[in-house]
Image 1 (cartoon, one colour):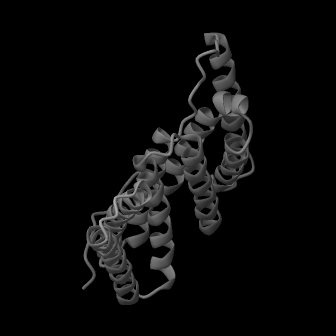
Image 2 (spheres, helix red, strand yellow):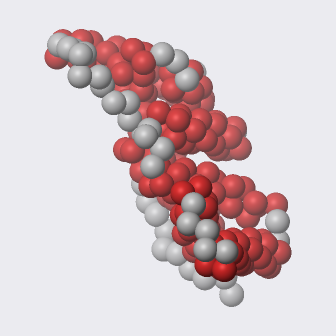
Length: 233
């Protein structure tokens, strides 16, 4: 069940990053956030299946190749007196990718550090919840200027979502004695559908569904009584 939740979260993250990139003005900061967001997800997954040393050497190699490419393009432009707009854009894009690679490498070092603790899963759960919260904060829909939305519409929208999922969660956990992860999976699937739907659906339903997902994630992944972290001996 945990793998299903993480897989659904991965779909939400990746589709959200892609949507944000294509709906933005595609400045270099947009590309930077895209590279960092996708890269952190990839490095987290690779950390599960690839050895620590191999993944470290691979990243160092990719960073080195990128740095040498930037240096080579700069020397080429200097030696040939080439001052083209396209060459400059390529160098800036490589610099953007290089900065993202460095950030991802730092995250990789942090993930390796976590492996030295006994309660790895508990720490990872808190990181997942924190990463999801940051993603939701920055992954919002811009409401067009020509939209007028009465306050009662927001109240009905949020009220229905919380009423339906609050009742569903109580029914499943209290009535049917099932785990809270079932309504969490349902809400994640609902958020994926909403996120890839039209503008109106996203405006009225994306944020309340994100709030529902966060509440259920915290209930499921964050223990009320946390144990102190201890290094492996």
